[in-house]
Length: 204
Image 1 (spheres, rainbow, N blue to C red):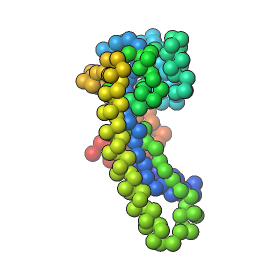
Image 2: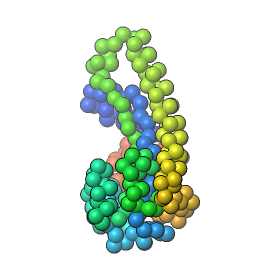
Image 3: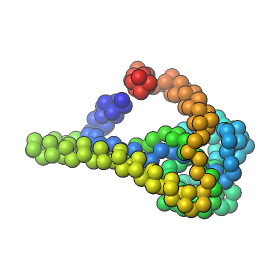
């Protein structure tokens, strides 16, 4: 849905998109149980960009800017009490040592894009270009599949490390959807026609 617009934006910078794959979905981690977003009111919520700061504000939490490398220490010292990040980050950074609750809310799917300089691509002969794009398409398919598989594996590891994992948080998911709809509406005010087209295609 957004790929043509991403390709157009990159092309304006002299770049060519080879492929994009998702990081595992963002889940909600907390040191205390969370039955609804109202339970986050007044807490200190980790933020790492404007969007996560906005989410924290919308649930009545105080956004605290903390990078992933410092998150475990921030939890240990009480600097933050909850946050949104992937199951992969939870395992890799051993966040289960401090945060004891994980809610598999699939808040959003961050994507990693692999690009190449357009002039360098154009300098390749046609067979090489074709081979590169074929390899990129294969990598993209594998990436989507592996991301989903690894997410399940990481969530099982979080549970095995003693976290209480909740994959049935329908109420939390609905509340996040409401927040997402509000943020999308705000974004559309500045995104113009292309932004509206992306959202319309997504909703179909």
